[in-house]
Length: 323
Image 1 (tube, rainbow, N blue to C red):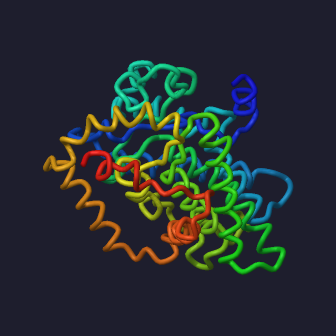
Image 2 (cartoon, rainbow, N blue to C red; image 1 turned 60 degrees about the vertical axis):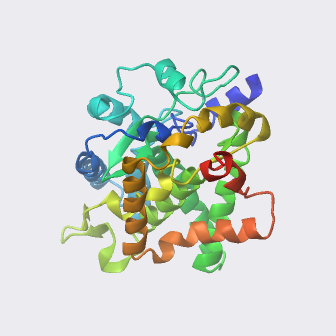
């Protein structure tokens, strides 16, 4: 276990909150903080552009983009998570003043020998435009999403098609969930993390690759500026809520988590839970998902082939264990 912890300490793509628990949000409403988060994201990017424009060396769009997105990352503890707890801590659940041990005791991970919550902090929950996600999803979005994009770019330079390049990026994410970002440190294979990673890829592609709709452009002074406002509503979706899109647990973890999940069996048909999930389904149906479902479709394709890399969570969902 010491080797695992050391590995995590030296891999900056690991998010501060390795896991979160959205089941705790059933029957609970938080204030929508999407406007504050969007404002912060745009301000951080604009400040980064000012720094880049102030350099003596003229930077390419790709270089300016990379610098901007890295402003949200950190070493182990990502800056976006630190900011969330500092500026919006009372709008999260548990609130920032509640310890991670208190959070852990309430969560589905409350059992002996659970490293989640005891050794690894958990991502606190937020309401982003009526979608409930853990702060760890934003860390995955900005951090692993940039890793996805780097892989995507390298594959495109090798002559791969956009679809093939995206497959390579998702393959990286699958490998991480099967190892140091999922199963090894926490025993959890998170489909919500994979969704956040891929949406981060789409976010990064839009900085320089979307023509007039790209986030970045040059003005008459040849300075980079934010030509199109960033709106994370374009990326945050219900598949990042792990009570709606459940994770898969390795066998030894499942033995401990299952009894905790069963505590929610009597609440599946609560009006508030039904209403929230109906709202999620409406979002999915109404949005022009298009390429946004690309990752989920690819994961389903691998899973349907019976490949071990993408587990089938059906045996672990509430519908199965609550019968």
